[in-house]
Image (cartoon, one colour):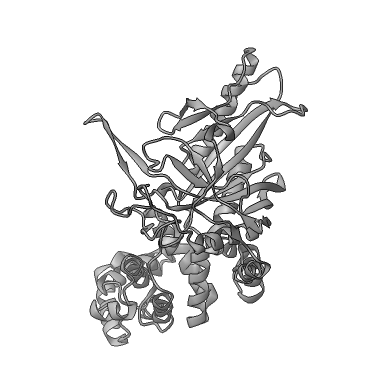
Length: 480
């Protein structure tokens, strides 16, 4: 619960969002960018900063950066350059980072967000390309720090917003819009838990109605939307308490501890001159032609808003379903490819909205982690439609398919799960169930409809779930 103050304060927030690009190799060398390799196995003399090595720019990095810029309404800088940002830190093997200060590749963009208060445009000051640093691993047992250079040289774009956001809700809406846009482009998987999308929050407060911004702080180490929301609330209160006490907010970088829900000062905030930026002498300027920009623009995908409008027109499914399915490109692609095979949009939607979302949640997975193929989902729908299996067996098969992407038809055959359509065998089983449950039979004949459900359940149990429920109901009623 927030404290009530004598004065009213407004929060002013801007974000620096780092996104790891989905290239196979690093920005200036041919080393793998794959996540999770053994320490220092995705390295070479270039990305470990050995003397005499020269960087060579990965063209795909430029194209991904341009695509993100165009999708966020940015101007593309026709002549852009790389600069050296000089600082010493053990995970920075060259003692400088190759980045862009003077001529970033994208500038002056914006994205539209939607919150409970309506639509809002958030400005993008710039997008620049840079290389990532390595990773320090602190071993408290041995009282030492180890460095892993696998991440060193992984390509990043940094998306710098204008200070246009005023609440945590707007920040999350902005981040979700960026993440969705970038995922639709295929430029990054934007997984916060793996560090492929990271946000630093620049926050200040000022009295409502004041024109000048307050002194801002930058918060780092925010790797979830929950952490970002809590960090914003905490920093807002901390700054207001300082101002109310007649003290000044110090411009500094702070580190957020998500376990303690507390931030602490790391260092005073550096200015550009502290890094002694200068143009990188080993990299030539990048000239971007109108034809190159046109080619990237022509290759942009159909984004969510366009997809939602088309789904509403083409597929007979509820708007709620459309909203969930198009929330990620992977789910939308899976839906469209499955419908193209079986032409059953509502049934495909039901499987995605029901069992798929349930299993994703239970397993702590994202939609892009789905393993089963459109072809196998279409086969499963065909098995149910053809009454080869019933709905309960279908759910059992789907769970295996979700985990291992098995062929459902083959799995049903191998495990003897086909629906028993032999009415004589079913009739015999039902007669045995009726004989074994005289009280339920008497209850049903006395007008208690629920007794029929019990008898259906007993029959399905006796048939090991392989009977057609519709046929069970019909035969039961006939015999009763």
